[in-house]
Amino acid sequence: MPEAAGLLRVALITDHDAQGRHLRELLEREGVAVVVDANIQEFDLQHTEGANVLLVNLDAETSLEIDRLELLIETSSLPILFNEGGVAKHPAWISKLVAKLAGMVSDTPPFPEPVLVEQKAAEQPEALQEVSPPPSAPHLQVVRPQAGDLDMPTIWVLGASLGGPQAVKHFLRALPDGLPFSFIYAQHIGASFVPLLAQQMQRVTDMSVSVASQGQAVRPGEVMVVPVDRRFMLTGRGTVHLSDEPIPGSYRPCIDDVIEQAVNAFGRKCGAIIFSGMGRDGERGCQRMLASACTVFAQQADSCVISSMPDAARSSGAVSYSATPEMLAERIEEITHALAPI
Image 1: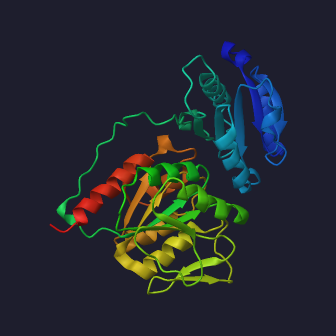
Image 2: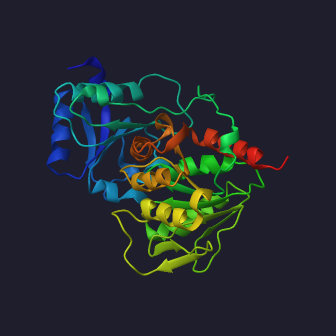
Image 3: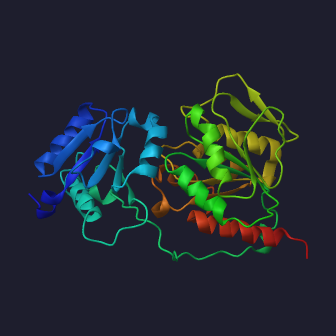
């Protein structure tokens, strides 16, 4: 048994299926104490006494509880490890998992927010990736607008899933006032949380933030939050039509569909930014943007809670720039200056 494993007291969230039980067995075989074992519907942060790290196994059922997972991220005082993609068969995988958990609870200076990491299970343990809070000065090159960048979008679709509200709040907070851009925000979330999401975003920006309504026009300097109980559509004049026809895809709202609507309505004036999230929603929309010569940015993987969505966007070949939410806002500001009349 690794010495570090004896220090670990894990609160485990699984769906109690065969995979979840197998994960617990592997942890205990490595000497890890699983002090809480619950599914996301039953999990209570008030009853994690003795735990020093939280491990969430994102399976098909858990992934549907995105509202509770977002609440978990916002309120947990424990560092969190998300495991997406199943339990790997490679015998070294569990050892790497335990090592990551141990590193999260070692005697290091605490971060102001929970340490959020993503880990994707794979046949080879080399695929495991840890996501730490972004440094205060990320080592990324800022690309200045060139002459060819002047025909840049003025309508941006912001697509996000798990971890998205935090990322989008950082992005909006960092944007300067008086932008000539419109933002259409498509966030995987439950219908009852959509108005609250709009209120949370309004607290961090001077732009007007509202849930999209029938007949509403897309206007510069405003953030429109896409509802999840009706299909969001845009007319050629850039006004909202909420339809009762089925919403495509497995998630609500469907980011692919929202991007498709935006491209149909605005053409090259439309761009997209894909933030933290699980799954691959947005990938097909990015492919459509690539085919339409539109601009796509994405949140860099090591600043995401879960990087599956921006990674899928990058795999489409459409993403021209990846950065932290704050640096994405800086890039938008640079575009503003590039578009300003001389």
